[in-house]
Image 1 (cartoon, chains in turn green, orange):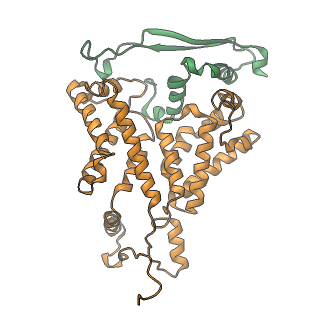
Image 2: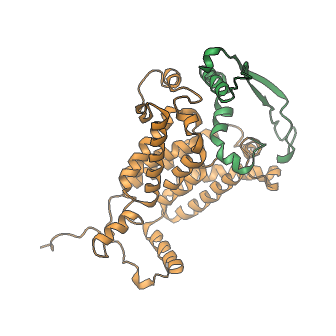
Length: 95
Length: 295
């Protein structure tokens, strides 16, 4: 989201809601397969078929301002990394 | 409210309607029914449409209904149509809605029971034309409006209670953390780089939200509370990217404004911008007149 313009962020807020507030978290694991198949269909190319997809979360905890105060434009980089899920495609996924 | 619904439909959903609600959506509705609905029935008109073309046509019809709702044409019918559509869409795909979407859905449902099309609307304009150029505005029971006010107060009470049960709002760091959420940031302002300012804003939020379910009912204090709420919501809207959220609350706060004050405001607007002479303004609302002189 931080790479999008103000207008793009306004338009794509629903995707942010889904992909950051909902999708990566374990209680949404029942929906991961459907979403993986959707992504595969979106990027399907018969000459270069998708093999797998993984959802990765990059994040960092903002410390309490009494420990370290960060200005808005000097936030620490998201150096922590989690893989929420990985899905291997099958032929049936693209039929 | 029709304008906000249009914004949701045309901008936030827009060309991605089928990605969210189509037969090949990013999450199949059968999966939603199994794991979110827990196999219990929920209201969902979208299930009646067998393919993407019919779903797309239904979406366009909802946009038309939202336009009608906004301009006050077939107002009650369009409110009902939009309310049922929002309920269906939220049940069909529950993972892309935030508190603002849910609040708009509630408000549109209350509007179905209100007389929102009776005054400044296309319906009224047509009724006046049918009546030969004049039609008194009749006062009607305002219980739907009262329900909206009570719902709003409950929302503020709930959010206040949730806030005071944590530490961040008490120690004033809540606004600091909120303005450091990169995916939600809108406008960066130097003032948010001041911890003191963030603390003051955090405590201001608590005070205003407390007042919005308590002091707002005191007539002498109401307009001060509403003005404070307007500042709060505009400030949040500038800092945080939640497209409909703050404006839904701002528009709903209008229900607390005295009708006579609203009428005075609109008369001022009509005089200044549309050249209507003061003498041409209709007199105060006529209550429903008795049909016979009392004996």
